[in-house]
Image (cartoon, rainbow, N blue to C red; front, side, top):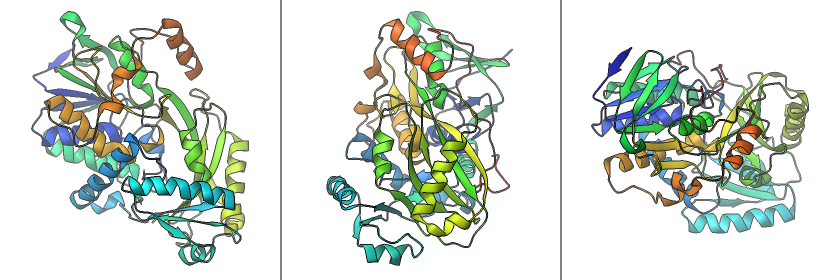
Length: 427
């Protein structure tokens, strides 16, 4: 077994969050290694849509993080190759009823106070922005700050930039143990091929973040939340924005384990239209749910009637890393000195990745963070009774382990091509 040292940081997880952590750490002068048992963007990231949204967040710490990340993505779009498909397409949130519009207007009032740009759109104005929308909608709001990237390619390019700055990548290596020293301080990780020694280990393991935390002896109640996306045949660019129903925001913030669907529709540069979004906690059940797909298709056709005559070529799904309070865990874990978390972003990981990377690097270096980090502290979960942890893990469909599970700590779903992916995916 090889040993790689000295390193400053080991990052577990090569999705978009782990790649962002590696990028900012390496550029700050830290020596970095990234390890993942799969390929770059092989899990939740590769099954995502690439959303960079502020419109779906209510005022609070996550919105503040999203606004910071929005600015950082603009900077990255100038540094990374154009094939990341960064688009400032803007979001259009629509309300079907006057009641729904009133609730949306109240949300927008608070969002504006927090720094979000949002413009009211009348029913007539909706057709000016999206000519193919269904008639009879009550109105909506246009969010020009909403943007999009091709998630797998953006991750690959970000990882390549991190490697150009000196980071090492060990893909295809499963983490089998978190190495600890006196007093339980984290000192690196072990894979089947090597030991990577460092005084800082970053848990960017997505839906497997709870397992990696357990290897270090701490509790992080990350659960998978399954979501499906429909992919249509290639079309002319008939949908100009990311368009979704006002109810989507409530579904994102819901803690229910039951199925929820609220339509999200967008066109892509390559032609297909992507249709989401569903949420349900069913563990790691990878089976195709035809009723969910039918519900999404019906909701999309109700919003854009022309879609009723468009062929759906395929569907794909992924698992969002869900934490009970809907905030990611970012920063140092005082329960295991040397362990830092960057996981639990649910469906917002791609949008929040740059700001997460900056916060983690600031914590490692002992510097002032660019945004308030306290609300994301992993310490907020504490060490609860063991039976609660067993209950959470049982719900996730994984073995109820308490300390050293035989897992790896990286995202779970194998990489698959989605319509926003170009032919070059690997870094």
